[in-house]
Amino acid sequence: MESLDFIEMKVPARAEYVGVVRLTTSGIANRMGFSYEEIEDLKVAISEALSNATEHAYKNEDGEVTIGFGLYQERLEVMIADRGGSFDLQKIKKNIGPYENNQSIEDLREGGFGLFLIEALMDKVEIKNDYGVIVLMTKYLHENEVDINDDQISTTQ
Amino acid sequence: MNLDIEWNDNGKTQGLKLAGEIDAYTAPKMKEALLPLTKHEGTTIVVDLERVNYMDSTGLGVFISALKSTKEYNSDLRLVALQDRVRRLFDITGLDSIINIDSTVRGGK
Image (cartoon, rainbow over all chains, first blue to last red; front, side):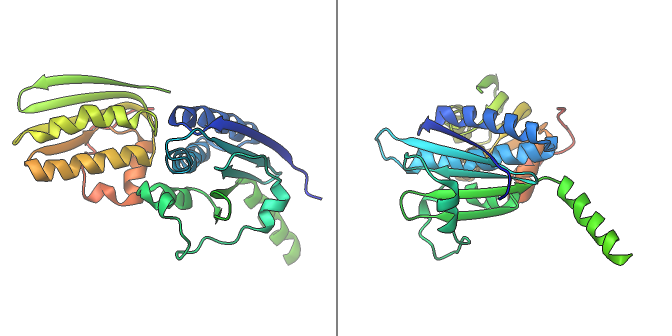
């Protein structure tokens, strides 16, 4: 079993809370040892997903967005779900496939460059649409590259 | 987590000095300040982003609206003094090729 710290927060689905989640993201990524540039990438990607959720999920009604941070040894997984409700990380992950163009994600596209930026700035992005929209994004720590190199050196001996 | 907007009216040149963060919450405020300025023929709008330390696609969206408006009203939009992080978003999205960005004035951290 992979070691994992999981942090979950819920915020009202309103634009003024995007900045709050961004600050939290910054704190978590900093604690994990991400570089300044990587933290900035994470801040933009997560704000994009959250902006989409606050803008499109609840038309003129109050709602909540749930944000889950999975802190692994070599990566950070961030899940953003816009139908309130607590979620089970392992369970949700089983239902998430790779993003495909034919999926009905008009709402995500509406921001123009939102989803494009998420995909450009994160290492892996998966989207599930069954009940509300769930975006799962992964960013790897660069330290991982050192480990891979170590392995390669040992196998050539 | 806020955006301050300073407006300098110099006739044909309209300056907007922005400071803070441009996101889903503050972008509407920026749009409100910027869009009306684009609606006067022959005007050049210079947006100073030196003190903008965060921006996402909501900001890009406002600049795209403003750019469209300048084409309609025959005015001109220029972005100056972008921090590297903000500049990068224009590069990644390819918007640097359609929006006039003055790279000779570079912003600090």
